[in-house]
Length: 254
Image 1 (cartoon, rainbow, N blue to C red):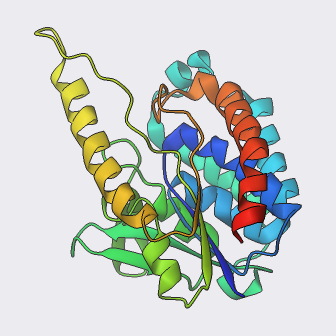
Image 2: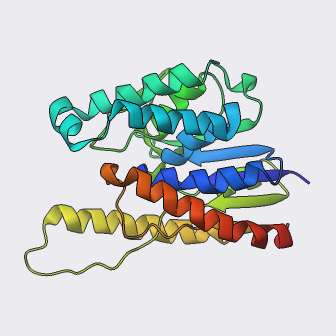
């Protein structure tokens, strides 16, 4: 039986995927991984070196204090943060072709010119992952060859369908996207309304994709936003505790 793993996007919420990855590593072999945005970063690290690589990436982020309020203000430009993340990936993932990964890996980016989702699975996987994670309006558009990409989550944020097309027999999904309560009042900013609209769209798309998965990890991180950089450690802890409770359900299902 071929097992596929789908990892959703979610910005800083993506650190919650670590819990599922750790439990799966001790339980079963994954044949193919497809990720979007933060899920693409986690998926690439796992495909290259398991949770040891994921842990190394997280430790590197924490040691540089990259997302501290002071650094965010000092760096000013989101491009610099994006570049730091890429440099950490290059330090850990020491290959430059998808074919050299121990586990089959792919990620989703959105072609900004054609408005179509793109399954990236050839060439340099780090460049592909950065394209998948290029959140529009925050991080720069990524150019690969002649194509220009933004965050894959604007097209497919929960990549179950791409794994079905790869003929996986059993698909495990890890989704960190969920809708929290939203209190609207007259003073609510337009930016918050736009953010909420995007969350609603993502959630409905996710529901459709998750319905096709055989098993779903869904850590309760809905009270946080994709940009809650200061909450990384807590979000990671929530994901770890949740996955420990859910792994036995997967043992029964698979």
